[in-house]
Length: 334
Image (cartoon, rainbow, N blue to C red; front, side, top):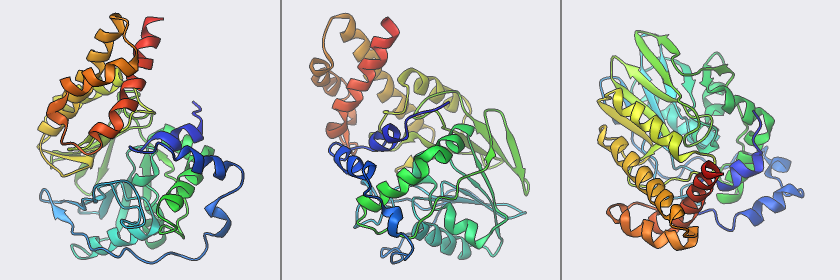
């Protein structure tokens, strides 16, 4: 499967209206890769690793888009301590973040990092693989086959350029270390007494999403299938597919849910994500049948989903989300 790399990078994060101009300039030769040898400074802010179960720790990233202030840090890197070694899930968006993750691991254990799982193609979740691979060259790196194909096809370099532009070169020195061990729905990876169960039900947030259920901890890592108190983007996604996937994740009955962005909580945050997704999509379906345009639907969707109005990006991103939902409904009807 091939997806246009410029499409995916341009529109995968909330609030990127206007960034098309930046990527256009990249397309004609403005590329950070031309001078990416000297590494930018380490992360200025300090972050803590929160223990969310007996063996699982999460470093909750700050809210907001990548910028010079947060140096591109925005996701939730996590690690699991097993008898064999440490397993990292969604390492982060730069070599600087990867080094911070390693520092946090070293405060908990002196075991080596033996594996990394990357939950989807968006580079804010996996470009920090570089630092971990440098420290532990034998580390195994798992991802969905679509992530591997897309990253090898140009998405990786596009993400490096994107992060450099958004952070004013604060991620300089980052190079793409692409996962090379494909996993898919139903796979179970046994590491040091823990089982990492892979769940992929088709296109949802992207085509490359995996959720990772860690047993016996019963902790699930959702990647960007689930946001906590934040409105995500759906430019690479499918609303109906996301609803089905979230139903599946709920049916697993996880005790702890680590979202792609936002604070770790229980299964209620999956239910909230599904409720919001379904309310948007069902309203667009209804108003499409009434003959309304996507522009006319937006205020109706905002009113019906007002219980989520305190979520980051709610007002700013809803227009784009309604438009994407409209296109999906339109395609289903023709």
